[in-house]
Image 1 (cartoon, helix red, strand yellow):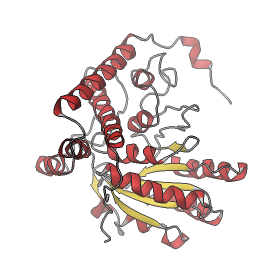
Image 2 (cartoon, one colour):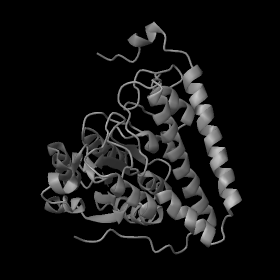
Image 3 (cartoon, helix red, strand yellow):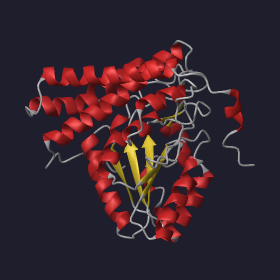
Image 4 (tube, rainbow, N blue to C red):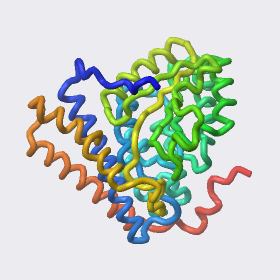
Length: 329
């Protein structure tokens, strides 16, 4: 199997590193708080945390431009924050409150922002993939140079609609980047046990779609891969596949005890590959930031997340007549 590409770490400014660090830390602290609120019974239903995978979406959003779109699965809070959605609105939706992005009616898996061109988390496995291609079709039809990102996981990579979408996207040369967030476990089944061809970036070969494997725990490698994929799509060459080799620290959802893997395995990834610690080390060893400066960023991020949690618990419940809005059939 081809090795996941790592970053060359060239021409990366201190400002970029600090931005990556802050964005990833925001997602980490937000998800930790969401886990706490779920444990307190303030978040109901399903809740899928993004802890460990922060480098994927932060790196790709750093490569994207204004106008590009994104659509993803149910593990979606990190994507919302990375594209600039307000933490208060996201957290309030998690608690089912009026101040949420879907007015408290969507919850964790169903939030949208037309302003930020975020077209949802989707609860049905792989349902978002053809939607991502549809967004790309609209871009091509309208003659823009915008590109859509369709995120899905290693488990969803085995779904039939993915390959129907690959065929159409290649046939029509749609500007769509298919991002496979390979966090190694589709719910509770390892990739090796569930996929006959574990090199997921090669899944588009039959359709003529190029792809590459990327170290999804290295935000700089992700950014570089995103730049390559976007250049390919904007040049009118059709879709591109990025397989992000990443890892989730928590279970599939908050109700998953994750007994299919050992604590030692998780701890090894945390200690050796954590995406936030990696950038932190680059900042400190490169003398771009002091420990005190990084602690101040963490304090600032925690304050923002705490205010979001307060807003989410103090915002009122949706009014009953809200049940009859946004109904189209």
